[in-house]
Length: 252
Ligand code: 2AM
Ligand code: CA
Image (tube, rainbow, N blue to C red; front, side):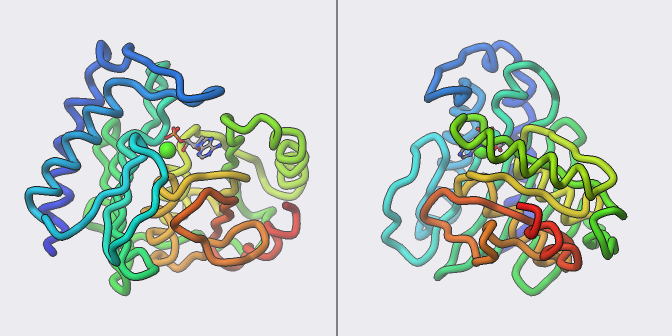
């Protein structure tokens, strides 16, 4: 599989993201959980193009929801991660594509159409930003770094406990950040802009590509209990440069 061919395909989604008229066509899936016509356009485009090129690979995309996957190999797509940002023209949204093979992620691409940045990783081959190798931060303690946080806005019952976590981490780290896109948060951990990231509930398409990017950049990704992530259901996610992982997890 030629990763440059897939990257070129993902870069074609920029025209869909730029369409402010389509971003205004909004449907509500749940509390603070929206889909716009841009999300649907991108998912349809990539499902079709990837299906034509790789007919043997199945497809799991956010806009069709979680369902049982029978095969050993499938794409995991978030056509727009950061849909609420897109609606408000906040300009922090990414396209996230991963390849799942027999229990692990072997390829991850995160495309930021606003900065035209492409983050990508293949299993065992390191992580890259626009062709240049990237590495996690060298912070040894929380007080040497900033931590990005997620609020799982569709699940408001998680908020009280989560804002206590955020306050504890804020008390130890240099500061916190909140972008509204978990995939971008993971890409930022991979290239060392932040020392870590956590969110109490995410879906596989939010974290699949970012997980490989962080790991291949030398970092670590687990759930809040320290267990490996599972790609068939929602769960908590904590990512870091590895060195601060246990200190960060200790505050969660
Ligand atoms: P979305 O923009 O594709 O909907 C915001 O907190 C980040 O987490 C975004 O990546 C958002 O994805 C995702 N997200 C928010 N709440 C979530 C939840 N309860 N379950 C799964 N993903 C969630
Ligand atoms: Ca998402």
